Image (spheres, chains in turn brown, orange):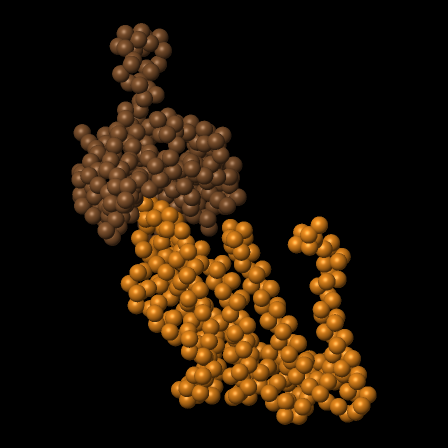
Length: 261
Length: 270
C-alpha cells in the first residue's frame, strides 16, 4: 500500500546527528506537509527524499524500487529560489522538462514542435502563456514559482518535492499559489512532499502534517541528539477528521459535494 | 544634504567626465610649450600640432621603402596575435572551467595546479618560449595564452561553482546527464561571464603582446614603438600609444555590446 517508504533513517554530518529513527510510509497521491523549527532536519529529510544526499543509515524506496543514489526523473523538485533556468525563456524552461533527458538535451524537428505545443498547453494551464517568450528574471516571484512547478510536472515525476516553495512570496501571492497548487494536485493526483515553516499552510494544503522535532534534548550540548518525526497529523478536513459524524457526512453527501474529497 | 547623496546633473556630469582629460592635455601642452620655447628642436614633448601631423602621415602615407602604410600593417599583425591568443585562452579556459567547476575529480586534480601555475610571472618564462617556439608568431601567441589563461580558468571555474546548486539539482531531476548539464545549463550561464572575464584580461593580453613584440618581431605595434624609441621619435610613439588605447577601448566596448546583445537574460546581473 505504501508508495514512498522511509525506514530507519539516520543522518549525521560528521559526528553531529541531524535525523534519527525516521520511519514513515506514504500512500500514492498523498500530500505530505513537513513542518518544524529551523535546524530540525526537515530540509535534510527532503534532500534525502530527493536523493541529493544519502542517509547514514536506513533507506528510502519509491514504489519498491531500490534506493536512489542521485536525483533523477522520478523525483521532481521546486526550491524556494533558483528553480528555473535563467538563460531559457519561460517556454523553453517548460520544454526543458522533457528535453533534458535526451542525449543532447534538446529536441529537433517534429519532436521539438510537439514539445513546444505541449509547453504552450502547460503554460496556458498555469496561466503563463502571456509571458512565454520572456526570461524568468522579468517575472514576479509567484510567476517564477508557478513556472518551476509547471516545469517539474512537465517531466512527469513520481513524487513532487517542494522545499519552502512559497517562502519568498508575499502573503497575497502565497494564497493564490495555494489555490494553484491545490488545483494542479486535484488534476494530477501527484504525491507531494512540502517543507514549510508556515503551520497554517501545512495544514491547509496537506493530507498529513509531519512535525520534525528533537525528542531528546541535552541543554549542555544541544547538538547531541538528532530530530525525528514527533507528530503525524491527519490534516484532511481542516485537521479534525474524528469530529465529523457519519450522519452529517451522509446528509451532506446527497445534495452537495463530498466534503472529504 | 550629505555629499554621498548629492548627484551631479547631466551637464555637470559631462563636464566632470571631460575635465581630467582636458587638464591632462593642457598639462602636456604647457610642458611642451615650455620645452619648445627653450629649445625649438626638442624631441621629448612634441607640440600637439606636430603629433597630429605625424598621426596623419602615419595613417595615410605609405612607407617609402616598402610601399605599405606601416601603421595599418602593424595594427593588423598585432590584432591577429592578440585575438588568436585571447581566443585560444578563452576556449581552453571555458572547457577547463566547466570541467573544474562541475566534476569533483577534475577539480581535485587541477585546481591546485592552476593555483600554483598562476603564480608564475609569464614574462619570466618568455625566454623559454622564444627558445622552444622560436621567434615567430607562435611564441607571441603562446605568451598571451600563458599570461591570461590561469586567470581565466580560475575565474571561470569559480563562476561555474557559483551557479546555484538548486539549478543543477533541478536539471538532474529533469533527467539531464552530466554532459547535458554542462552544455545546456552551465555553459550558457558561463558565456556572459566569459565575456566579462575576457574584458578584464584584455589589459594583460596587450601587455604581453607589446612585451613580446618589443623583444623580437619585425612588425607590430609594440615592435614599432620600441624601434622608433631609438630615434627619440616621441610623436610616433605617442600616436601609437593613443591608437593602442583607442583600440583597447573599442574592443572593450564591442565585448560589452556583444554581451548585452547575446545574453539579454543576464543583463540584470552584469
